[in-house]
Length: 409
Image 1: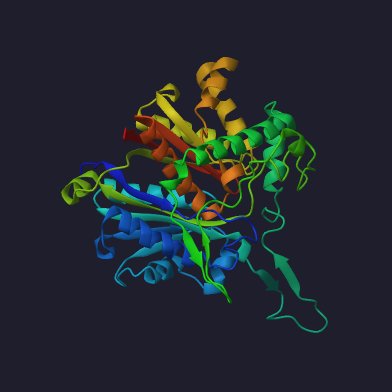
Image 2: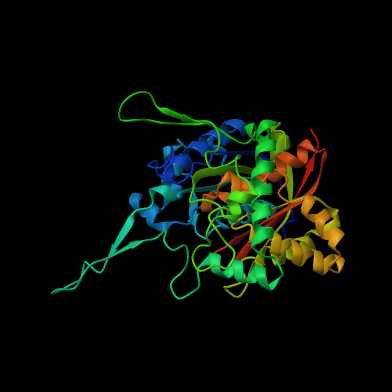
């Protein structure tokens, strides 16, 4: 039996996240993926032929289909990696790129690989309309045109916003508290940006134009630092939700993220500095309506695998699929571990999404799992190291989580 090996993060990078209809609106997600693959290899100081496996997450399959399929394969070839590189494209909704981390972690930990890329990419602006019922249509049958971005949901189920809002209300978390969290996310993000914190994780990208010079995107487009609680309170709810609005939810965004994972032995042999160590990973799936609470269950599961308690964590990241998600999941965690003590809940939330979250930075769904992990790792290192956990929910109440340990700068 192979002795489990330590798995480390050797490099982590993302593009700036572009808002819906923004600078990246016509750039295919495979090009975004190729861009971060090139950059993360460069930052790690390794060549493509040293990579054993590429796991590549994305969610919006209608956009993937513009370039047919095997998008991981296409992205790595565009990035200049050897054609012998093995890859896998996978879809676990918003969890996808954190699922890639989990699969790479397993490969390395149990000796199937030494170096793995975990990549996520999405461009929701570039999603095409899909024309159904045409190939075999006869007579006067009308074609059906479907926009796969509206509503954000799954056939036969409630909208994600409706489920998240209703479950939040069941936990005593109303519209006002969700708006306040959204405002906090914007403010925390703006403070972090002013402090230069995102410079470490972002690689700029240039977008060729039909006329004139390329547009250069150097920072996230989606944040709204001018947000006020009054503006948030004035917004209507969406998709039948009792609480979710455009202001306390993220956008339909574009971006990509990538991490280089290695065995510690490999990193040492190559002289590569380590950003962090992946201690454990976990996944859960729940009844479809419990999207807002699934991250809490994933965190509890991964803490058990890591042999840690909630109080051992210096920082947490829970993806803001809606403001309801970190609020509900943190309340559940505090109830389970601290008996519902309000002060302990507030202390827990002070460690949660300290640089803002997807409500501010944006949520290109395939890339967000990798993004929260790298944001967590960079911030832990800035704060002198320690343990941290991240979790993300995915469509129909799946969730992935990871625990990492970092050393200080």
